[in-house]
Image (cartoon, rainbow, N blue to C red):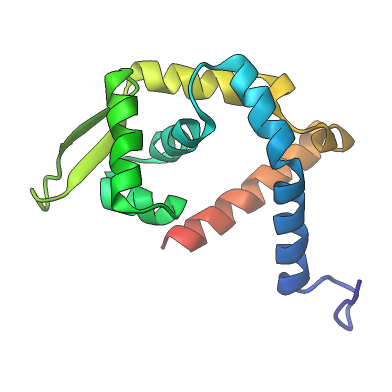
Length: 146
């Protein structure tokens, strides 16, 4: 692996490593999550995003990389299950704002608080390392969403 003169990995190298880790672990992670909750993984992905903050259905589709019709089906299913609400956006009534419900929050918590849903590779990190990694990923997510 190449490094900068200071010996640190470049942002590009870190990105490729993160991407590879996520892709390599995705199947295991999806299977474990499916054992805990009774909704398709695509629905859980959307639910997790709106758990972070309410957003328009259009923004949710863009962030998840799906088209508007697919997102409409995902949100319809989540609304039908009582996991999110969909209401006209206060700033633009043509847009629909998706917000997590208490029941939806419980589903997200059930997955995120269950150590069995995390890929095995996280066992290599102690609690402090996990905390630091979480903080760094939060910074990256905020930068990506701004």
